[in-house]
Every structure is written in C-alpha cells, then in structure tokens.
Image (cartoon, rainbow, N blue to C red):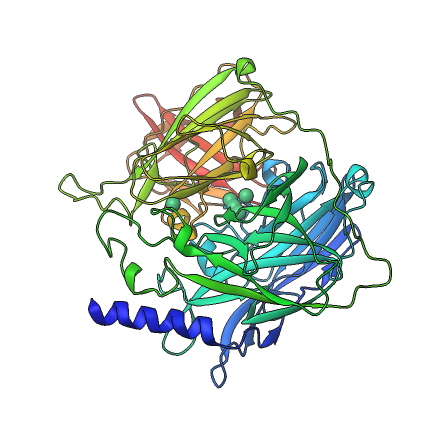
Length: 578
Ligand code: C2O
Ligand code: CU
Ligand code: CU
C-alpha cells in the first residue's frame, strides 16, 4: 500500500513536471451537407512509439469525423460497416424515430450499409455518435468509434457566437483509455491512465486571442472530468447536453460524466502570448464518482481503483498557447442566449421509479455495490424484452434511485429532459437546461421530467442505460416503447424449449420445428401490443414438418409466436431485424 501511494505521488509529480503538450491537437475533419458517408473501418495508430495499436475509425483509422448539420435538414447517413463484426451507430441526443436511433436493435452486419434518413429536429447543440451493439459498446467506442454531431439553427446563428469549426469553434472530445502491456487498447480495465483529447495524447492547442467556443464531450468509458483552467480563469457555459441555455453561466469548474456535453466560451482577447492548461481537478470530485479520490466504502472496492494514478489527482488535459487573433474575431460574450421553458411537474401524467442496483446472480451472492453486475429495477438488459411502455405525448417524471456505491450517469434516448431535483435539491446551475445524461450519485435519487413526443413505434424500442460503458454492456440498460395504442399490457412471455425457431433474430423468414406439436395446428404471430400480424393453419404438424413464416414485410422488433393445437398452446419470442 505504501509503495502504491509513493508511486502515485511520483506519477502526479511527473505529470506536474513534464513539459506540457507535445502533440498538436487533432481536429477531426468535418462533414457537411445532407448525405453523409461513414465508412467504419479498422486501422492502426502509433499512439506509443514502437507499438502500433489496432484501432477502429470512420473515414480514417481512428476516431470519427465531426458531422455538422442545420436544424430542419433532412439527412441520410450511410453507415458502411467495413469491420469483420457487426456494429451499430447511435446518434446520441438526437430526437429521431426508434428505427433510426441506432440502438442494439439496429445491428449493421459486417460488410453491409445501414442508411437511416431523418429530419434534424433538435435545436442547436453538441451531440455525438457512437456504436451501441449489444454488449459491444465499450469495445467499439474504446477502439475509436466516437464522433461529434453539431447542430446549428437560426436562433443560435443570430447570437454572434464563435461558429467557425476548427478556428474559434473547437471540439474537445476527452477520453481516457487503458492499454495493456503490448500497448493495445484494453477494455473493461480500470487502469485507464492515458488521456486523449480528440485522440491526441499530451495535446497542445494554439488558440487565437479572442472568444473561443469549446464543445466539451466526455467520451470516456468510465471516467468523469472536473474541468477547469490552471490559471483559474472564469469560463462561460452556454450549452448543456441538449443545447443553449438562457444566459451564459460563469464557472471555474464543470463536471462532465461519460456521455455528457457542454459548450463553453473562454475570453482570450487580452491573453496573447500566455500559456495555460485545461485541467481535470480530480481531487475535488465527490467520492463515488469514477475519477474521484475514492469509490465505495473501502479502498479498492473497485479492482485497482487505488492504483490508478489519475483517481483523485489533478492532471492536465490540454495545453493552450494563446497566439495572435484571427482576421475578424468574436470579442464579446452575449449576455442572453435562448429562452428556456422547462416542463412543469404539475403537468406530469405518469410517475415512474427506476432502481439502479446490483444484480444478485445467486441468493448467496455477496453484492459488490461498486462493481456490478448492475441492473435496473432488478433486471439486466434483454433484447427480447421491452421494459416500459410509454404512451405517446405522455409527460413523465422519472425518479432514479441509486442503491450502489458508485455514481452512474443515466442516459435516455429519444428525448431531452429537465432535472427537477437531486436528493431533494434543485440541480446546480450547470445542469439546469436540456439534458440527456444525468449523474446519479451513490445512495442518492434524481428526478427528471420529460415528454415523449413525435415518434411512436409499436415494435422498436428506445434505450435507457448507464453511460459507464461496461455497466451498459453488462446489462445496466432497459428499453421503452413509445406508442399511442391504448390498453397496452405487457404480454407475459413464456418461452418453450421444445419450440425451435431459426434463425432468430431473422431478416427474411423463420423456420419453426417442434417435437411435441402433433396434428392440426394454428400459427399466430402477434406484436408486443397484441396486434395479430400473421396467421396460418395446417393439418399435420409432426417432427418432420417445418413451418416457414415469411418475415420480409414485417417491421423490426419483437414478436410473439403462438402455435395452438387442439390440446395445447406453445409460444416463444422472436425478433425481426432489417
Ligand atoms: Cu451515448 Cu445509448 O448512448
Ligand atoms: Cu443515446
Ligand atoms: Cu453505471
């Protein structure tokens, strides 16, 4: 223990003494227009000399381009999966239909292209995109598949904010990664000691002496960042996850958990020639947050937590050197931005409670309240189950109860929400606005309000989950279906071992076989809300008979297959994918 503490001090000392910023900050190339070709591919990066690291990237070996669009655009995104494994692509924070959302149900097979097309409905803001494959999010994001998704709108453009990408409007995707002994990116590893901004290790950025807009995204798998500047200067938060706030918030610290975004303005107009650093002040983070001095009640309740020199430390993220201003710089910070009209709690139609807790695999399990496996409302994610039915246009208050020793950033797809309270108190100013991720502290509760508007789909669910990626991959995720169909009752689904249906999931047809079904039979296929989508009957079902159900015309989602004979009924759940 002594030795570890000593090496930790040495490491922090080394961080403090090293020459800041060796490598110019990479600015991901931008893509504009309405048709986007995103080629997902493998590559290698020389992140550490002498040991090329296998990576994933879009339109390049590592990381992903920045997509820039305008509200109201109708965009088509051709996601061409050049990997040898399936992936998905999710537009985090965007208000799109479930089948365009890119969650685990929209799997893109190796060598195929998925082309969602939708209207940009969100207001101006900083969003992002990343894979969301079942159990594979951390692997694919960690290897480099993460990009920024910027939306502009007319109101924002009239405010005089810096908006020239790469000049005064700068993406800062902060990520920590773990590497194994061969300098290969390691997954579900708590020794995430390499800090990258836009994929650059030990980065510096030459910032012109004017007002600069930084779009901050915490794209890490686990680590939260408590951002601040080494010179102590005030910066102005102008946007939360879902877009602009009412007035710029003057701050000296800003905490972002994985998945969260913020836009900030820094006024460098009088600082030409100065150098300072964007820092993470980990020593000031509240215990329980991954990256704080401690998580759990005893040291190392998370494997290796105490050995990671970044935990509880203050360290550099990006060195900034102020250089001469550009030709027509922005030099002022607007005093007001956009009106903010949150939802009102009195208008809520439904209250729901979600408990974030350890899943006890066996009755004798001793729960480890900081390392999982975690679930929501006692369940782990199951592709075949829909957890919550939300009526279209329902205004809802969701209360999140964290029963564990670690803070979980809770994220919900489809909509933006307003935090009503955290442990009974209104949220801090930096969390007042439109949000799609909220950090729920250990043994704390959070209430948010939202309205499920625009999109409904009886078959394809949206996701909610913890944005610590290995928690998500391990099943700390659930699904919800938004539908205007009345009287939705969750169908009770009991699988039948004897009923064999393949392939499942399927794109074209299901072949049904059984050993115990005999004689006359009827096949009924229903959607999750009980609508019959297919019916057929036959005279001689026995173990030689195979029933074939054509599925090409079905929309993707979960179906219930029932086979009725004169005596019995057999049923199983099936999934249709595109
Ligand atoms: Cu950023 Cu469901 O994900
Ligand atoms: Cu999302
Ligand atoms: Cu979590």
